[in-house]
Amino acid sequence: MKSNRKIENKIDAETVKEVKKFINEEILASRIWVFSGIAISILLCMILKNYMIFELDNIIQSLRKLKVPDVKGIFFIILFILEILFLFILPKILINKQKKNMKSALTVLSLIMGLILAIFYSEFTFFFKQKAIVAGIMFLLTLILAVLLIKKDIKNIQTKILEKVEEGNTEILEKTRFFSAIILYSDIVKALTMYFLMMLIIK
Image (cartoon, rainbow, N blue to C red; front, side, top):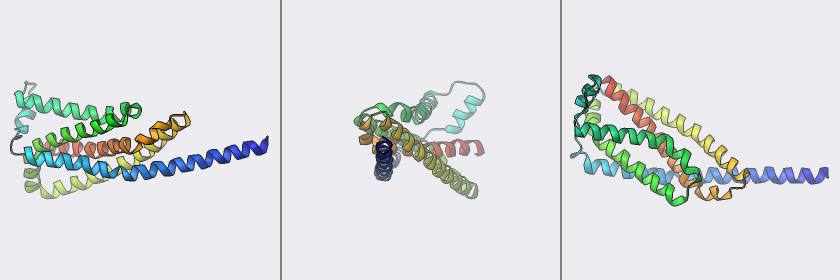
């Protein structure tokens, strides 16, 4: 009996090791989808940057004076809130969804980020020209934040997927790549969002 238990424990340990190896490989492979999301955002930004010139200073002043912004301002605020909600809600609800839903979610998140980049483009370039040193320091801090978020979430991805596998849900392994891509892309967007908010405050 004792020998059987030892064999079972050994098999379990080996299985966990193989699953961890598979998860790590899928997380590495997900960078292709992360880069695809970034590419969609940048491409959309370049297409729309000349058509999405928002007077962000006026919007902020209106909010500080507790006044209702114009239609463009309301659209921007709704878009920004929607993006933030997506960043924090999507990773939690998508773990039990199908692979196609994860692909769609990554596309939607990329498009929303592209719109926001287009809105911020003129402010971003102006900020870099006027306050290059401050902008450079902030950009470096943003990169550090993104790296820390990614490292933390990689561990969380491994833990969540292992828990699902232990519960008998092996289908999650097929979705690991897309689930990882959404979380890692979300981390990058979170860091960029923080940069934009800090930019508006300092400016």
